[in-house]
Amino acid sequence: MRFVLLGPPGAGKGTQAQALVTRFGIPQISSGDLLRAVVREDSDLGREAAGYMDRGQLVPDEFVLKLIAERFRKDDAQRGFILDGFPRNLSQAEALAKGLEHSGLALDKVVAITLPDGEILKRITGRRTCRSCSAMYHLVFEPPAKPGICDKCGGELYQRDDDSEDTVRERIKVYHAATQPLLDFYRRLGLLAEVDGVGRPEEVEKRVMAALAPGA
Image (cartoon, rainbow, N blue to C red; front, side, top):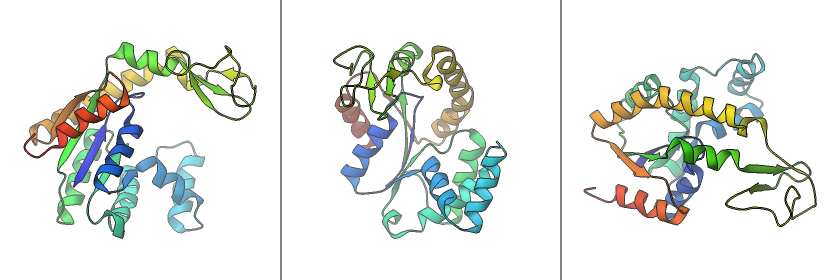
């Protein structure tokens, strides 16, 4: 089975991807993880990727697709995979479709986890991180025993810059602009399943599994 998992920031894609890994025994393939891994390698690809990042440039779609295509050829991906974080826009989706077709493969389903913008804001702006041990908390869902203090090491908790309200609002805006054409593309292909992301992770997992059931 070959899936794409989409969703806005704070939707819990990572949690749901791991549930799919456990259920189907197929790997989660994250474009971000692939890029970080190749940069650590002493290879031509690694040096090329690092060059883009060092210059503050986006890594070209063609390069990311090359990494993903190589990952598809590994033994653990022969039975299927879960794509997480790619494609991010219409051009990437079209390129992915062509690459899969060239390899004689096709996607089985695209699951888009949906969240109201207000819920996204609540989830992300409530995050706090320990300055000392990097432990994560949430003011609503997983608060520390003492406000502003890490339960594990007593360090100071702070809000990362990318979790501030202004930054999150901008991330939401960018997500909607890039993702709507992507959703329309997969809807036209009959691959899209939209799943309500509000609720506990286990509740969302049940909805995801129902969307992936044969005939759904």
